[in-house]
Length: 381
Image 1 (tube, rainbow, N blue to C red):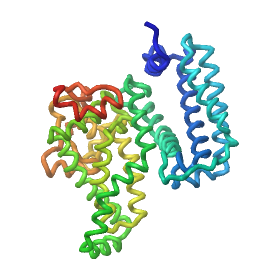
Image 2 (cartoon, one colour):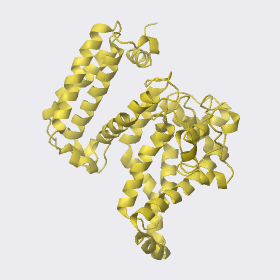
Image 3 (cartoon, rainbow, N blue to C red):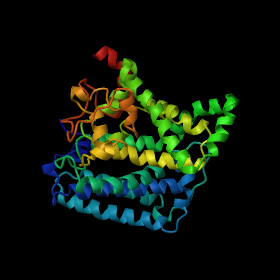
Image 4 (tube, rainbow, N blue to C red):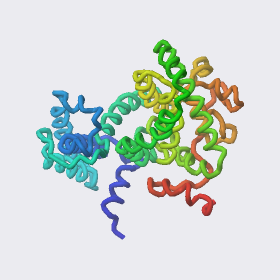
């Protein structure tokens, strides 16, 4: 039976390591698709800003070199797509990149002008995805190659395509996720006037004290939320999706069920948004969490035993994802291991790493199947 285009694209993107060598056209095809998608996303954000752009990123779009960056991305995509088409027996990678780049060019390319549209007040953060991906990728991909815990694990490891899709959707749905996660704190701020004294006291604290307090309070809230998702069978169905990743790297942390993302951010943001912390403290903490989440999942070597007594390090969180029995239901904290020590869930053996990651149950692959999994889990297990 003949393969469909999408099946062939999936097979090519997940080709085994030995089929990705220099001269095969795989890297040219992959980076052509990446550059073409970046260019297409930026063109869409410029052409329909009311639909595909975050208002907070308007300064980046107005930057003088932004259009030049689009132009370079599309030229690079065309060049690499043609190289891939020449080198690979299957042309699907190059053809896909070529189609994306051509679509961006037809829409206006680097010279694109905004098109008047009906502003419904709803947007999809294509520009946020690109900025987030480029920033995170440039930060973590090189250091994972320079200091890997598992040298045999490649950047494009098994399941990377699935986790990248999670990264894309969570970025594009940033407005919806933010709206839903702000609901609990909006209710508290509207109805709990008795917190006004606490808010005044917290806002008067020095900035660094506020930042440290914000880290501790959110970590404490996240600890119990996280532990609850491990102990309640129905909630575990959502969290099992996150734990189903069989490899750990900076991208693996993006694999989270949509409902868990909303609940987690809604609960853990309560201290930040209801106790009077300065906006700059909240913004700095959100930036830290984005980086820290990628860091603790990263494929990075180093035991860091001394630092690990005070701060969560990659090896600490890797044990939380371990397939071994001794790591199950351990290490729930995100910033401070002392919380796990206090509540008896700390596990960090000296110099030892897990042998593998994942869960013993059969969590399906694919975004849609994993979104359905918590609701079908009982009848399947």
